[in-house]
Image (tube, rainbow, N blue to C red; front, side, top):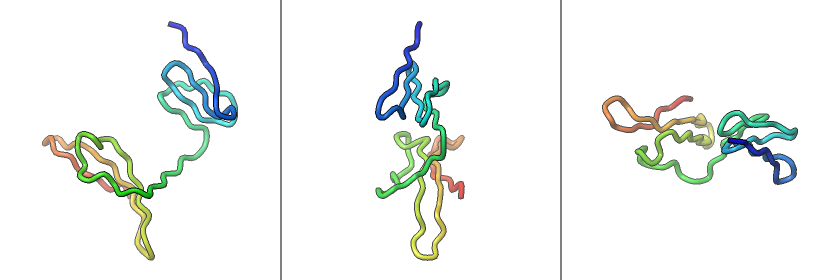
Length: 89
């Protein structure tokens, strides 16, 4: 099968088969999503609640208000089959 590389949106998005790359210079993405540079998580909506099969694998960032600490959480499935938000920071 031949993969086709093409770019769109101001030469910042690159596609190779089903892989997508975001870069200011041409790239051939080797993963489903490749980003050349930092990634900022900015959320204005409420975190999906509860953590369940539909939000499994979701990474969620919440800005702390006032003097509260920011949090970074991931929705995971436990060995028991239940789901839970774990705090990474």
